[in-house]
Image 1 (tube, each protein chain N blue to C red):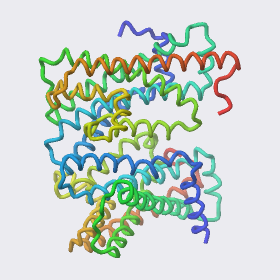
Image 2 (cartoon, each protein chain N blue to C red; image 1 turned 180 degrees about the horizontal axis):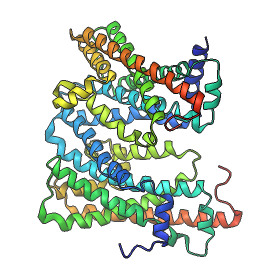
Image 3 (tube, rainbow over the protein chains, first blue to last red; image 1 turned 90 degrees about the vertical axis):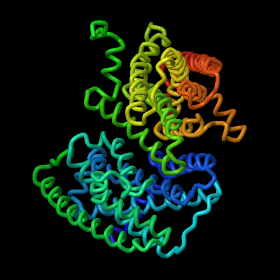
Image 4 (cartoon, each protein chain N blue to C red; image 1 turned 120 degrees about the vertical axis):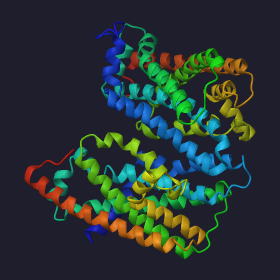
Length: 254
Length: 261
């Protein structure tokens, strides 16, 4: 029950118009990217814009997860609420997973917004053959984003100054996870790295679900499997982190 | 660097207000980050309309990234001054405010120069967009004119940013507007006429067209474009100086600067 309460509070806080920090990511970034896509497609008439409308949504979703979930734990230290969280009668993992999950749900809102902008402002038609399969693939993607957010929160909290480099993480992940170009067209080394990121499989599943590609089920299953591996790893690390924080009051950047 | 005075105004401003104080951070944010930025748009364009258009986009983004760097530096400087409460002291000091701003502009200017030069190098080495050697003189003139117009605009932009309690949204929107309306990724002639007019009163738009013409990607006359860019720069400079002067008078009269925000 506490998790649901936290979830609702988190969603309310981040989608509040008073919270200017995330307004750009949520509402404006998809608009800007779609504007660029709109004018670029005028240069060549036969562009299949479906992929780029989805790409716009994916970029906004990733940006939001990176900047919100990434700082979810470190920000507790900045706000001096970390002590309260450690002392609270719920585990640190429950707190972080609720934040990562709520951020992924909000990321879903940016996807919906991207589609609304694409359809009603730019007049792009999005051809989705089977909406149920598409929704299913989006759920898989959301799960992978949630796990990636969890990992980011741990990494940012565990190493000094990693937070300063979050802008540098942003673009390479978009490039290697197959947002614009399918991962199998990337150089072999990058391909291997990309397949180790749960989001890559989630993105692959979404694109395959749009085209009803037969590989979509495999991509979804692999995405869930890879996400679970990271999830278990995260559970283990966060428990360790909580123990160390209770005993010594220090962990990495916190 | 014998000419840098250790306790000089510019050096102290750099130490106090500039974000990248180590070589590692400088390399990451002034070489790696631009490379990623160019790759992002190059990949988008290649995936969408093919690689024929790559040089057009890379050149546009080199100019755009330089502009972003200068604007962010300028705004960060003003923001930090406000956060540490030294903005009012700068204005109240017997040194003319404009002279203080000019001396503080040295660091963003040098940073912008570096980003532009390294951008052209990245464009050449990674994307194969080679600078025609007989055009180096023109590139230098363009460089000076563009930096002047961007600095003038950045000054106005930084002053305006003081009106906002949270400047991140303002900054991100401004950078996004530049990315869309200055012809960075597509020609401004594709925009509807009203928006094209808006694009043409922004700094950078004419410079990007001139830079592409220098590279032979577009075929406009270079000097008329640079003349327009210079004129736009002067207009922004006059407006920003008026703004600074109003700010200065208000600050002296009230003994505070935008404290109510």
